[in-house]
Amino acid sequence: MNFGFFQRAIIQGIPLLFGSSGEILTEKSGHLNLGIPGTMYVGAMGGFMGAFFYENNASNFVPALAVLVALLGSILGSLLMGLIYCFLTVTLRANQNVTGLALTTFGVGFGNFFGGSIRKLSNSEVASVAVSKTSLAFCSRKILSFSILAYAAVIIALIMAFVLKYTRIGLHLRAVGENPATADAAGINVNRYKYISTCLGSVIAGLGGLYYIMDYANGVWSNDGFGDRGWLAIALVIFAIWRPSLSILGSFLFGGLLIVHNYLGQTLHLTMATQEIFVMTPYVVTVLVLILISTRRKKETQPPAHLGLSYFREER
Image (tube, rainbow, N blue to C red; front, side, top):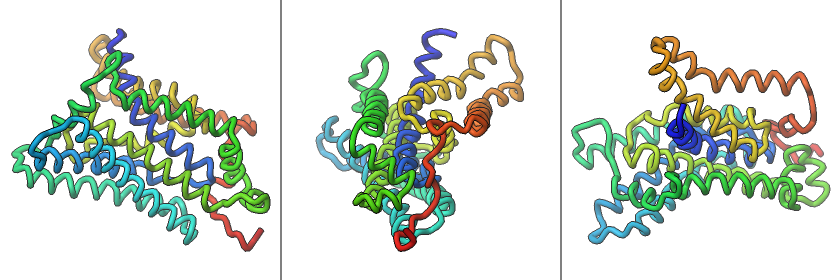
């Protein structure tokens, strides 16, 4: 192992950190959003579409404006996903698991459809299309080999940890996730907190998709190229026991586990079948952590008490 491995592990882990931070914020309000993988996909495609049309229609390319357009596209796309989820699960009280899975299916289909459409518009002869100028604008000012979005992911997680633990807003949000009826009786607007936390969490997760496209993939879009990172981000929430600060270390660990087989395969001459076992390790670690926290039954390691349950105000 060398410094290059740790650097690549962090780069691999940043999309997971964005996704897990967004999901932790959502789950703290009592909602389990399995649509995070689709939201990250839409966030990536929204930013990519903004960058593509700007690069191909601007007479004078301005790097700062290209970054702004891509950010805006990503934020709007992931925010729309969050609003759809909230409308269905908070307002209409639809089943959260089914709604999340439907949004993930929709998000992946949305990205693949527009990815293919953009490839045709660009007359690309290969199965991918790139926005190299915008990607370069995102990565032009790296600090210690990491772009500004990488540092933003860590800062967002730290701010979230502080807000959830030490502020009145965080206290109210945790109260909504633990017992919405009691929070409602105390004068807290339950639906407002659910909407804001879920939509903001979706936007944060969407930035993970944008980072993957603009930084990790160097501005190249390939259908289904995002892999299972969205699901890993949800698994990371359990690994971090719903603490944003722990998700920082967890994301880097998961990032390392995703690529360690490449390094071990070269030094230990592992077969492809053996290397695939190492690819499974993030999920195996998550299962072990889930078993551990389930057996210990300590309050601080448990999910919000009302997680996954709809709130019916008339029943309180």
